[in-house]
Length: 245
Image: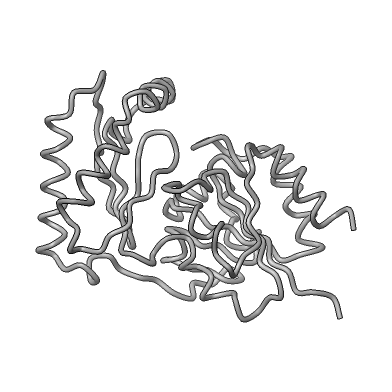
């Protein structure tokens, strides 16, 4: 009997250039791949952003779509689960955390700041020192600046100490932000919806290093992890793994 295989894909840096839309070539390739294995998407962003990048039909174009690391889960176009950070933490803890972050960013000396420094999602907070309203050029410039100045890693360390009792995980991804969520609510969260249905679960992601938002699922004993460097590399590795048999 043929193995039941699921290929799970990160979005930014894996299927798309960060925050850009996927190319027709990548989208066509994924549909060809679906003829051989089941295909799932697992992104840290909310469903709206994933739809912007992979198409409005994303829920029906793939077998599984896990937005916000799987805290909002869809199978076969139907929502099967949703988790709430607000309920989990409670308003008082949430307010204290948000107030601290906003004060920290207000005192942060970086070249530019724009707007939307905290984005509240169902299962996580997305924190951006520069603000998510920045342009693509400003994103690119901040990414370069952050690699030298370590703005995000330093901020994460401060938050880890200040809110140690909250048991939160901090995950740096993309160019300008990091995600904050309860321990265990990383991308491994989505595996609970699929682990019993497949003989092999392959995960493809670009930020598979410690602290990256693909690290936990990449390292999980429940997955076969693949580190990729671009959409083209993802296609190459998938071809070798599944289509060259």
